Amino acid sequence: MISPRSDLLPHMAKSLAKKKPAAAFAAGDDESARGRLLNAATHLFCKNGINATGIDAIIDEAGTAKTTLYKLFGSKTNLVHAVLESEGRQWREWFIGAIEGGGGDPQTKLSRIFPALKSWFAEERFYGCPFINAVAEHDKDAKQFRNIALKHKKVVLAHIEKLAAEMGATEPAVLAHQLALLIDGAIVAAMVSGDPAVADTAGLAASNLFAPAKLKKAKRAGSATEQLLAV
Image 1 (cartoon, rainbow, N blue to C red):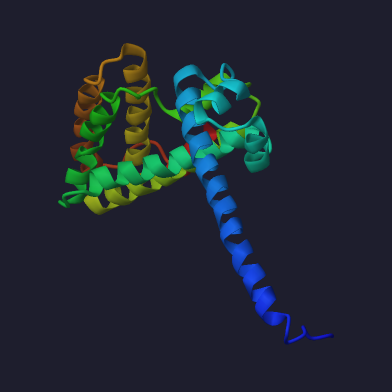
Image 2 (cartoon, rainbow, N blue to C red):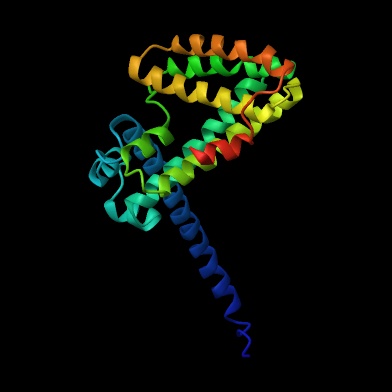
């Protein structure tokens, strides 16, 4: 291997020093464009629907070129996947933080679920659950969005089941599944009615589950995950 000439090293160092900021700037541009595209796509997909939202509308709102979208995501389908993954992660962080915040015993934490949802329902940009919407929009045999939705729901169910077990529920998996059904029902009801107070009704139904869950075994068997996969 031929080593670089010593008299060229200073010039090479200067050349590399000039190139690094440019590369870093380009990477920063890509990251900024990616964020704008994700934000624009999230807003438009949630508000108008995935199928009703075209690439042109996304790049217009994001202020990027069409070539940038395809460079960063490859296709609209990949962009949808990225949006769902990002939305799911952010929503789970918010949801778990909302019920865990302030401490308290496990039942107190579970009781925070529906007040937290009510605050979400009251937001101007509440358009329902992006996972429920995505699955509803597409062919029921299409598994790509269903699999992403199931992945998201498994994480939520696992946390609820953990709290249910700590609360002393004799069948924590069943209680978790019951609460998850109330959560999904409240989300759909709030989206359809536009009334955040549906969370209060769901919360009342949830509170009626806690005491019986500690006293006797529920008749339904199987883990919450198994039941979810069976749907």
